Image (cartoon, rainbow, N blue to C red; front, side, top):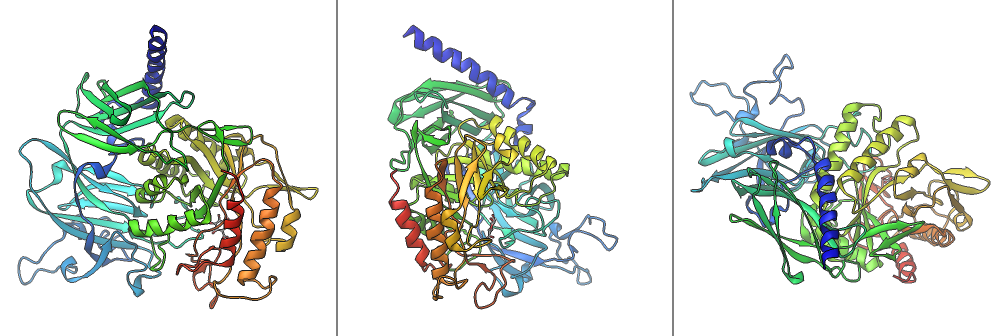
Amino acid sequence: MKQSYRRDSIIKTIFFIHLLILVSGINSSAQAQSDARFQLQNIDSRQSDNLDGLWSIIVDPLENGYYNHRWLPKEDGYFKNKKMETPSDLIEYDFDTDELLMVPGDWNTQAEKLYYYEGTMWYKTEFEFTPSEEEREEYLHFGAINYEALIYLNGEKVGEHIGGYTSFSLNVTDFLNEGNNVLILKVDNKRKREGVPTINTDWWNYGGITRSVHLVSTPKKHIYDYFIQLDAEQKDLMSGWVLMKNSERGDQVQLEIPELEVQTMVEVNEDGLGAFSFSANPDVWSPTNPKLYEVLLKTDKEVISDEIGFRTIETQGSKILLNGEAIFLKGISIHEEAPFKTGRVTSIEEVRVLLKWAKELGCNFVRLAHYPHSELMVREAEKLGLMVWSEIPVYWTVLFEHEETYQNAENQLKEMIARDKNRAGVVLWSIANETPLSEPRLTFLRKLAAIARSLDQTRLITAALDTQTRRAGENIIDDPLGEYVDVIGVNSYCGWYGGTPRSCKNLKWGSEYDKPVIFSEFGGGALQGLHGEDNERWTEEYQSAVYRNNIEMLKNIEFLAGTSPWILMDFRSHRRHLKRIQADFNRKGLISEQGVKKESFYIMQEYYNSIEY
Ligand code: GCU
């Protein structure tokens, strides 16, 4: 008994030192809020008002609501929501007589005239607020806004955010009125060369408040964030940390996992941080047993309840081990495109349709491309036993030598990890997709990989690469980035962007790394319902020939640890013009956007069903 106690206390000390390194430089809990490594965790478990619904909008392509005619920021822009007070007042905007848009949702698919719109959209909503007896903190929480947002409450700027796919919260306690409150956002989805992603992508630039908005209320002294994980090396040790706000040194949080009869007290330091580690022997999460435990974090003022799974993920040579067992990742890539109505996914029903199709395909894994999907999607995938590859949109040719671009990418990486760090289903953080070889690119991505590792040792780091070289009839995986990731993603379109479908079955692959490789993209396009010979581009027969021959190729790659063909469902893209066939849709889906499966769906399903777990 003495021995194990000693071991735990040593581990606890080591972990706590690690924790302090992780969060060094936080000298005030206020700073923790602006530090993207932490998030107001688990909104669903907190007291909140949902602000979703119809919001008033003003379409403002010239940003007239923000800049004056000298292109200087206005003191009294649209964010002041001014109203005429005398009959002669000159006010040339009025949210209340303008139009409406649904939040959450992209604007492109809500109105014909907004289909191609890229620019500033002003959003306004109003809500009532009643202060409580005791002092509390009030936060505005946004699931995602694409791409750049300025947030104003009662005419005062309360925050801003860049990045179209990560959630963030703003403490607005001091800006709220008792009674009526006016919340106005300036949302700008203009693509920028220095952006993340940059100016060109192969998906539609859906703009808007694309995920839910909540006003979240917490006790003055509250649990802000937490991380609980199964120790990477020891499956019978759990460790993690809690971050409190407005706390004092010595304040305590009780952590409980009732089903495991775990109850431990976590004491926080002067920064509100408390580390913990304790022995526990959970039933581990896996695709065949997606076990989640009720985890309770309690103070005398609040109870936060979460559903958390516990598992280990690691590599051993070219194998991926889940809970110490080799597993083949039978996956599919998915864009956040809603089935049937199209546009950004906004509802749990749409999430369930997409993930049901993935399960029907025989998947135990989904690659959520090319940006962090909603928390709805990640939590539902975990519940269904689907492992998740989650990715930041460092896509193609971002400006690798531009410091602001790097900071933006790092911030989005931190926000992605901060939101989903407790999701056992997430097993891979991806830092890039198809980025061209260069020293600046390697430096940029090496730094991102190091940041991800410093924040989270319980997941694998990966990137999707299209940089293999061709040597003596073989494709060789030799990208220098391979050195810095745990798992190498390979995007390769034999039979579509090169070669004939039949040439693929004999294509050989080699790798300079003794690391797992996931074929993160392969496939080809077909218009659902178009039939012909298998050498006729766009027919289902052609796509089927691409899949049959690529599957034969994959069977000969002994270091292959998984696949996520491109892609589950047809999705909208500005790059896909061919009328009659594409009509703004990338047709590489195994299923049409109207939910009709193509022949290749069944070819892929047969392959997955032939692979042991
Ligand atoms: C690339 C890219 C995808 C794109 C696909 C295609 O590999 O990663 O985002 O949609 O190819 O060309 O269809």
